[in-house]
Image 1 (cartoon, rainbow, N blue to C red):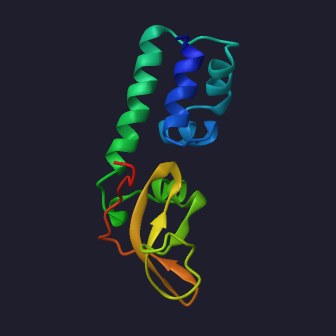
Image 2: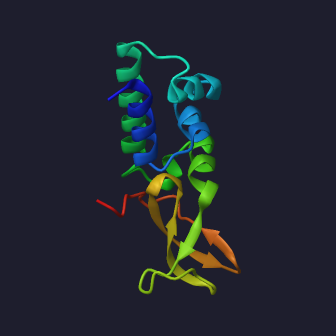
Length: 130
């Protein structure tokens, strides 16, 4: 598998956009784009570092409490925040306990109060596909 295919695979496995992957890793989006399109190729050691860092970053977030995240991590995960009824799997349209689907395929328990999503600082982030 070529470097650009590996990068795209790892990024899409974690449901990340190029911008989201770059934000997590603190690297310029142009660099990632050029690698993923094949215009430039990272060295083997750089490719391995990037892939491992991305895996580790997502794994670090899993199992963390919401309150332990940095503001940047919260903003990153909240990009596609959606409140879901834990029993029916439907979008929450009323106040009550629910599951909050986050970006990158992660979730956290929460609730809807007065139409707003509320996540307790002690709520644990998890990957529902595991």
